Image (cartoon, rainbow, N blue to C red; front, side, top):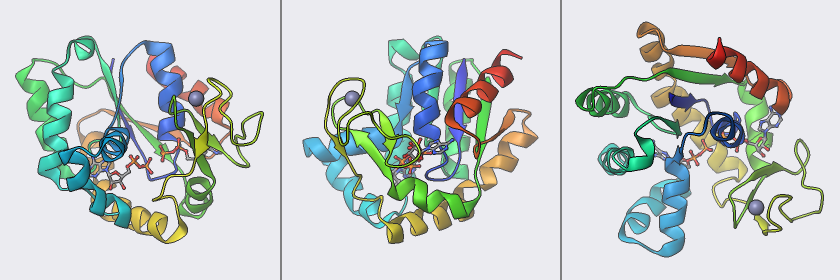
Length: 214
Ligand code: ADP
Ligand code: ADP
Ligand code: ZN
């Protein structure tokens, strides 16, 4: 399966990615996770991306495309992958098409998780992430059993520095202007699968499986 998860910040892409990689045994490629790891490790890529991410702006296309192209060439992507947070612009989508075409493969589906904007800010602001394994929680919607501690690995939960109200609002605007045109892009190519992301997390997961297994 060669999959893309599309949806605004806070839609539930990361949450559903954890589930999809489990079900379909494909590697999870989150450009946001790759940037955060590089920022933490102080790499050159991290330094170049940090100021954009802190403002809630998009990292320049050239930087992002290069990373994804290299990642897709790794052996574990041979039989499939799940892209989460990429592509985010039409330029990135066109470049991805070129990369796939070069390898003689095509996308299986683009899962578009739909959530109304009013819900997104509280979802992102209440988000907590495990420092050790990356699992995603929500202080109200999906709390861990023990406050601040990951259920899966006992790791420490933290709040992303860009998950503050003003930055989230900025990210949502950017999604509407720059990323949402991709809905039409993939619809035209017959790849789009729409999923109602306002349902319970488990119901959303079930709908995704139903759509992919047919
Ligand atoms: P994204 O990767 O699209 O930004 P996440 O998967 O990180 O979104 O989810 C954002 C926040 O919303 C997290 O705190 C997550 O626990 C919560 N969340 C995800 N899906 C749902 C859902 N269906 N209902 C309620 N809360 C959800
Ligand atoms: P969310 O889960 O809220 O959708 P991500 O973790 O996917 O956020 O991304 C966090 C930030 O990383 C974005 O706000 C943006 O600055 C940067 N980023 C991630 N993916 C891309 C991309 N494909 N193109 C440009 N910037 C990106
Ligand atoms: Zn964990």
